[in-house]
Image (cartoon, rainbow, N blue to C red):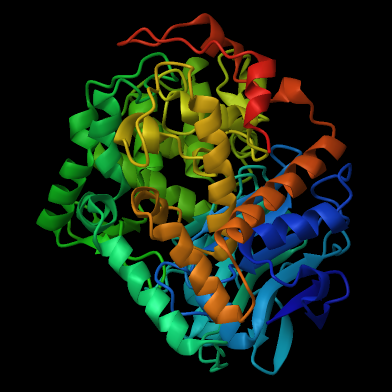
Length: 573
């Protein structure tokens, strides 16, 4: 495996051996490159920043659920280091071209045309983009018609072209649709600043992968599949109802943030629940099970059709349904699905934009619960409308523009779909992760609510700092292998899980790789990220939730927050 480095100013490229980055992949690779090669004090949209797209260590293999993609850079949203994780076909295709990562460097002159970068088995091509200015679905059609129907894509929408801080990188899914998002932290803005509309990989490439111990790997892979198939969450709950299975669960726990985190209970939750979602999809001829990448055996995604039975969106996740639903007081699944599709088309993070729309509601620009108005406002992003420029830069930016003081962000990134007062382990993660507020950085919901991997009371402070710390290390390791985060549900409850992951790495690479090595992979990744953020100017005072979480208790259980700055530092590696 090699690294492809592309100079976006000169439109030149070179292939490099992994060298000092050997043994890394996914998030560990993106964060190590950012920490070593990007000045911590640079402007995120400057030529000094780099955008890294890296597959995980296990991406070249046939390990189940190993097709996740890491996208890293200095974040235009947080001002710190960022890794944004996505599904799609990109991670499966890179190794066929002999590549583990692509690094976009430098920056064209102002006014340079957007470009398409085509990576073929024997060369890299640069073209003025045929899809500049287009929304992603139309752009995908144009790109495939121009460069070949077998291309796998990573692209930005209009939000990324405008370098807006909530912009995503959209990856094509197994159906060839640009529906999978590296959503958080504005990675699309970095790609847009380098005037790259799309990167296309030739999926007909036939590069072969060599296993150091093929029989040993097959045995480990078989055990890995067995672990996934024998856990109720990965084999039943997620495939049956998607991630939206959590709507009713989290609402019952009193932790579903409602009306901009004023309550943990939403009266309309049943209307937007995973059960209602599955029933609606079945009635309209969609798909209740769908993989975000080839080799996914959990199949927690889905294909959602509109009232006329026509395709509307896919990857319709719990976070999106919560954000555009309960948090905005909207209980119409069709409206929420259109919001999701609009975000995919324009290329913007649904979590960030849902919280942004809450700021518009706080300011009286939109009425609470008015889904049609939310759709109208979202469609302004990526256009010449000045409001669209404000919204597209995220929650904190919009709150400042509108004079709103109830702003649910940490390190400038909007909070996801669990109120930290009722799910304290994930709250600690929000506060202390180098990524800014990010549930996937240490998913304490597992122990606090689902009782997977232990039972720690999410209403009480005791034990939750340690839970978050351990999960942050484990998550960084999983991201570095290129595995889906949801494998953690099974791994946490099966003693075979962590040794099996280590064994797959060892039999693939031929180098000793123990459980301790796996833990060190995650811990060292976090150390890279914390080091970068320290040099970027972050201090322990930045590891805090917004003040209203300290001063207000959360109905219906009337739980508070209560952690000090000093207590939260215990979550750091």
